[in-house]
Length: 257
Image 1 (spheres, rainbow, N blue to C red):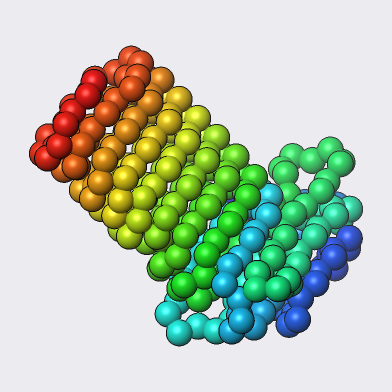
Image 2: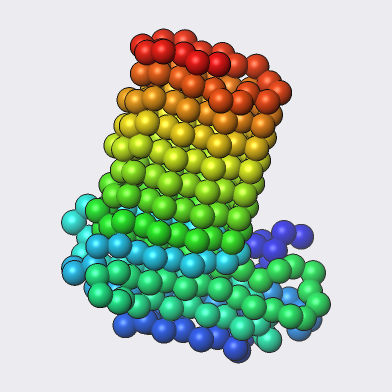
C-alpha cells in the first residue's frame, strides 16, 4: 500500500528541533503499524520579510515548492515531516541582516524500509532572491521575479519566472520558462526543456535531450549525449555535441557547430 494512502493516527514525534519567530503545530500524526513506520508531523513557520531581500535555503530529501507572491511581506512555510521516532529533525527559519535563512534536514542512522524526508511549501515575496542548496526530491518554483541560484542533487526541477538563473543539477529532468534574464545551467543527466528565456543561455550537459525555444540572446551548448533542438535564438554555438542529432531553426545570428 502506498505510504501516503495509509490510515493515520495521533502520535508523538521525538527528536525534533524547530526554530522560528512563529510556530504552529498544525497536525501531529503517525502511521498505523510497528515502530519502524514513518511518522507525519506538519509544522508552520513564518518570518517578517519587510526588510529582507534574499532567502538562503539548505534542504535535504523531500519536495520543495516555492511560490512568489507580489505584495507579500512575509515568508510562509508549511513543512510536512516524515520521520521516525529516533530521527533527528532540524527545521529553522531565521533572518540575518537582510537575508532569510531556512534549514530543513533529517538525520537517521537506524535501519528502515524508507528514508525520512520533509516536504516544504514556501510563499515568498515575488522580488526575493533565492539561493538554494537541495539534496533530493522534486523542485517547483513559480512567480519569483528575482535572481535564482540553485544547486540540486537529484530530482526534477520546474521553474517558471525568475531573472538571472544559475542552476547546477546532478540528475533529473529540468523545465525552465519565462525568465527575464540569462540562464547558466550545468546538468549531469536528464532531459532539459527551456522556453522564453530573456537573455543568453549557457548549457553544460552530461546526457539527456536538450530542447530550447524562444531565447532573447545567444545559446551555447556543451553536451555529452542526447539530441539537441534549438528554435528561435540570436545565435547558436555547439561546442561539443557528443552523440545525438543537432537540429535548429530561426536563428537570427551565426551558427557554429
